[in-house]
Image 1 (cartoon, chains in turn red, yellow):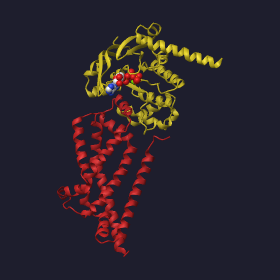
Image 2 (cartoon, helix red, strand yellow):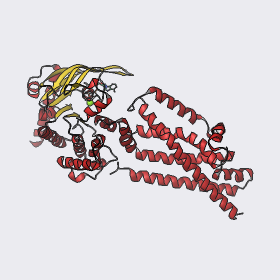
Image 3 (cartoon, chains in turn green, cyan):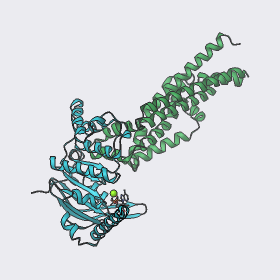
Image 4 (cartoon, helix red, strand yellow):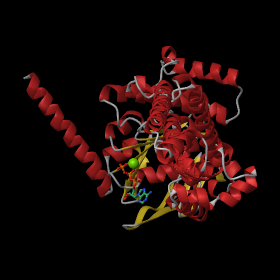
Length: 220
Length: 263
Ligand SMILES: Nc1ncnc2c1ncn2[C@@H]1O[C@H](COP(=O)(O)OP(=O)(O)OP(=O)(O)O)[C@@H](O)[C@H]1O
Ligand SMILES: [Mg+2]
């Protein structure tokens, strides 16, 4: 039973999982990074406080984050169909993944940026810096290690979510685990997919942490 | 001559959760170009709030702040940003960018002002040499001592050739020896470039060392102002008396301890 078809299937599953994880995290940041920045700067203590903007984004983030991913997956099927034309397969799974990842990423970005020393921001303001300059050169640049740790966490979380999408035929390793392990009782294949998932998370975690340490200049 | 800084009926009220705080109450004073102006007062007197109002980091609740005759309160965002480039500020905690090396920290205000990279680097290097850190250009702030960090901050603040320098407890995190060297540096900057310096401190020796004029704050009000000589030899307000006489007593006390140790 360890024939080529199984190996091919697992390789394809790994490829699909990586594809979903990377694309979803990427698009998650396309939306989540600006959202996180706006959350950070419009809050009371931010550089341009705006309670209305903050409260709206805060509310949106909370609502999406409180919907369990499996429910969200089903809930957004109409949107998925609209964007990709079908509701199953890896590419279709990216849509709910991005929707789920965006507020999660925004929250992590928000908290990373809020960790930046207020004094540094104040120094930039005292130099007559324009708000986009402060965001780019003080907030994002100073928070970069924390932001990278965030990327690592986001990748791991999205990978986990992508496996869940297997329940509705989302493709990837989760799909394989459910088809073989749950419906056909082939526990060995299921265990193998778990091992691959664990290895993938370990690699991403390891690389992310290494990179963020490398880029951190706060140590002596 | 028009004073370089003029503060008119300045008040700042904080509406904190714990209640209303009158941090600065109806303050008037002016600072002449080239002065080193000290602001002293007990903790919570409103010194930091007052100095932060001078470049509108804190927007006053009422009153006006004139820099070279122009009212900051009437300025557009753009004008204000431009004026701020002429008002440098250094801080107790240095506030350097921790992820940038020393040279790039000094380049930061030049980037903000739109100076070309090559030109900025040359200017930054020149300033680092000026503050005695020419060999630390490639180091990161985390690798420097407190005194060295403050020197970087001073190089950084000089980058845009400001006419005014605001210092909020700039030496309070430093030991006496390092404090002395930083004060000497400030004094030489004042003499060499004619930069007007506003020094906030709770350490009387800082005022005695470098200031020409001093203002005493007490519970947000201006208790007294004058030349350092006037105020220190003949303090009139009770707030000034407390600060200055207590300080002298402490000096005497530490002197006795010192002598005791020697004898
Ligand atoms: N952002 C703020 N919100 C509410 N209250 C504030 C704020 N900033 C300062 N205050 C209050 O205003 C008063 C003056 O504070 P300020 O920091 O100006 O004092 P200070 O003279 O600089 O004291 P220190 O010597 O301890 O630095 C204090 O009572 C302080 O609690
Ligand atoms: Mg203070």
